[in-house]
Length: 404
Image (cartoon, rainbow, N blue to C red):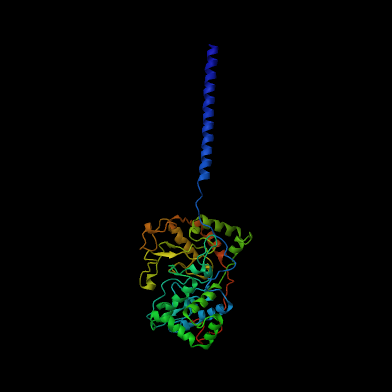
């Protein structure tokens, strides 16, 4: 009887030991599988942000020279380029406002005043410009990717990327009815008229000859574009505290700002706002509010899809109001817009939720994180950009147009 009991106990212990060993082996096998899966699964790419290059590139066909830059600066501030001689490039892109204008939508032809105080003249049949005036600061780097690669010849311009390069961009506002042309001159005649005006001014003939000495006829549409673009490329602000931090100065940002940068990335903002310019320069549908009340019609964006180009986040201090329509006045409103993308009705009723960009739906901004993210965005400001305004322009017209 004792022997039988001993055998039974031994058998029970043996079975228990076997079960224990089997469970241990199974747990070890599960841990191995989890480690294998972890090694195989790539973490989601949330985008990379980086410092700007310390120097900019110019197209091979338009190398930068001091003569071109100085000529371009004078052209930029001279209303001789506009149909009614009342608007300059600087009217809507003034250095005091970070080369923007502080308005929801720009007022070009037939306007008077400066910045947010600019208004149409009492008798007016000119519409607002179609979209918010983006800053020209750092447009030398437009198109730069997360690795720092870009070609100035292919740099995307405007909210709908319809033009590539600063050279080609510089000619478009001159031809545009509401921006600089007005109603007195037909679009196809506008650039030839401007060139004829420049040729009639001795000071410009001399300046063009100095800048384009190899050309038999230096005063041309393309040379005008080259000069303006050469000037605009010098409008660089590439040494913000963020840039200093990304270049190795660990003390350039506070702990709170570093936390904001991490939250910016984790929230999905860098999916589109990536690279050195914090822009992928691609078109996205966000369902942001349009500005029909000022335009008098619906702006439906690129190819009627309500898609617009990702703007840079640099120097936001100077470039309010925000978005292509200028409808958001503060960074708090911008961040709240992105928070509301998670389920709330879109501000643009013409955009169904299923049309939202695939990256936009991944953005998860939490209200509690907004102040920290804005702290980080403010580290992207750099006020050390060229603010030089000519004392006079060769045409003798008012510098910057009718802004006084």
